[in-house]
Length: 425
Ligand SMILES: *Cc1c(COP(=O)(O)O)cnc(C)c1O
Image (cartoon, rainbow, N blue to C red):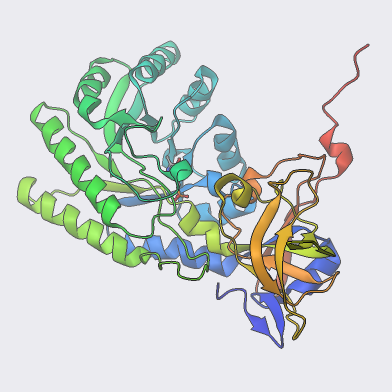
């Protein structure tokens, strides 16, 4: 995470020392680097330059309005999974004509909202959803552009909770049912069949499963073409992994290498069967855009020696960062101002009343109460998965731009948390 360097023994976010941020805004606080965000987005945008391609940032990874605004200005589209996310895109000034709507459970109200803003495409996951969307579009006198999320049944070789492309997953239309489902879609008068998509999993380190999924999509596009169902875009989903820094962890494939191989395959296919006529390509990256953009800054409350374990109790908890509790995810923990000597092995835990409330196991730290720690690579699926469990206000979010520091979300006060509740009369 090169945008969080040590200078004079102190971790910085770009040009700003993290202790200054903790001093001014308190902890726990998410701190993001704008330069890192632009660099990650540009790695996709540059690999796509000169092509008909759209990078739809999967905003469930981090949906702060400032992040959406920065990406929208850079030309990003958005992959949304709820009506609420569409409202965020609009609030941030994003273009609904670059929005695709994913998810297995779209409600009538969400379909109406998305149709009223003429989004680019609905990624549909079932026949009942096709019928519902057709009905809603008919009622509004509109036509909905649709893509079918096909389940290519490839093993993404990732954690079971984030593998989504296997037959046993709830996502997508089974590969063997895709043709029949497309026929249904093509027969419905208020739907326009526009494309095909898949999303096989998350934190993929190798692009082989993605390229295998691409082969399956290509096969289907050709088959559909023979039936007169011509698709205009191919959406390969997101899923590229990032480096979390665990010892022995394989390095994720570079975005440029993956996109290079993917475009090479697509170009060869189009040249062989379509006289080189291009097809629009859509990507839905989430983690690889924001994961390494942020750290969770936290302060050590207590060091608590135990009979079999030492605990480092910090002021951030599972409600702030759920990945360890939910996925047994490994997160890097670094001292903001490293010390020498007195190194001990600790479990880094939060104040929440759950044994599952841990952020890291077995870390060797030279730590004192009051020291700051940075939980690294916390920009994706950090703040967006946070909750108010234990009536803990959500952390503040800060965006650093060089030596400039911007509050992009204020810390929640406890009173905000029960403001919508009422006593019965
Ligand atoms: C979550 C999600 C993504 C983004 O996944 P990453 O692993 O964060 O890149 C893309 N598409 C869909 C449909 C998703 O649900």
